[in-house]
Length: 230
Image 1 (cartoon, one colour):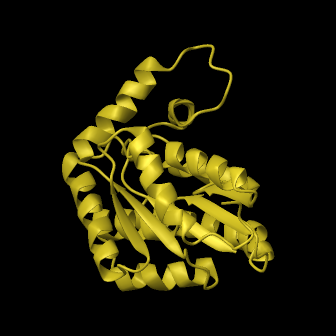
Image 2: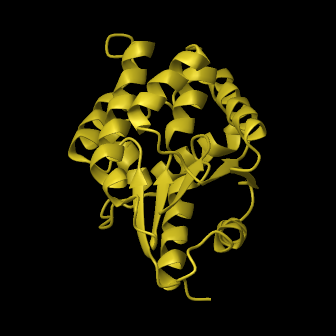
């Protein structure tokens, strides 16, 4: 199993690039499993709705509760979806966020002790970690403006579920946070990437979707199982 994760702040384009990458991997003749966090299990979907609810003072989660809900969703995802297939040499897993997001958001963003989060992540992931991680990096003001623009542009009769549709249903918990919070997250992601340069690839997410997709695909091709089509 090749495990790839896409990370970044709000509106960086992770979901779009995850879909693009899945299509290219499948075109290469490989099986690809796309997952997202929190989600991709029944429990994960329920917890996603809890986590993403309004950030008003009477409904806001405590920092620790938020951390543990993410960990619970991740443990369920790993245990029931990823781990049972980890020995499949022809499978590629593409994750729209994974444990690094918790370090960036709850650690650098919320201020929870990083070592505490690492311990919680270790328990939740059961030792499974991405082989390759792409950081879609862009200034937070660009990402947030994209999210708000998508909401305004989404047609009322949209048939296919989309990230913008999800945001309308779930709320804008993290998007509503102040600019300082998003800047801390961005710097946190960059710090994490600096610690593990062999795993991380920093991608300029201010460019066009096609250029970003091509850059990611070029890096992924070198890591695909030998059974992939050229």
